[in-house]
Amino acid sequence: MGTVKARIALEYDSSIEQVYSSQEREFVKKVESVIPEGALVINQPHDGSVFAYGLDGLNTYFRSASSFGYSDEADSIREGMKDFVSDPAIKKAVEDTGATYLLMLDQGVSYEDGKWITTYHESYVPMWDGLNKITDDTPGLEVVLADGDMRLYKITAVDDTEKNEG
Image 1: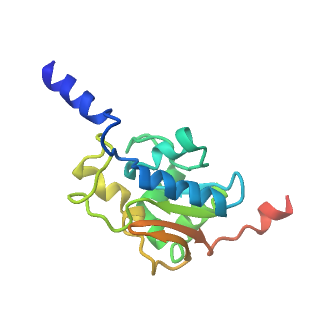
Image 2: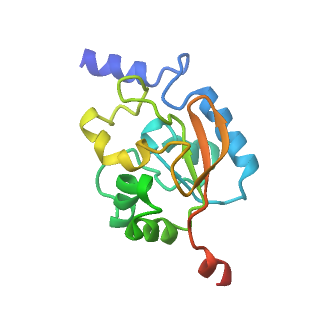
């Protein structure tokens, strides 16, 4: 019980930077100021962005810090987003969400070097490679904001014609 108590105390200690750091929260505030209100933002929840919806109101796609139990559409996105332009099934999954932006708070940060949600284990990293391997050169994405390892991308390779006609 002592170990559990110590771990909980450390994970919830507000006097030290946590997985959703003050710099990341400031970046999310900038994101909110440049995207349309209510725009859906695909995110890698284990980088801390899982808290951006509840704490800051950002309309994120992944609102759970789990690596299991997602829809087929969500699984396609988290496993294949990096290839969405060249893979029609993944592109359709992205289009079907209506998402127009992608947020990465730890873009390019390795598991060993990052601060992640405690439920995110090294064995889960490959399950999120579609997002983890996003770079500034990923086709179909355009950098809107960048600060250190934090990125906001506009998803440019989606067909939103139907959504705009409806």
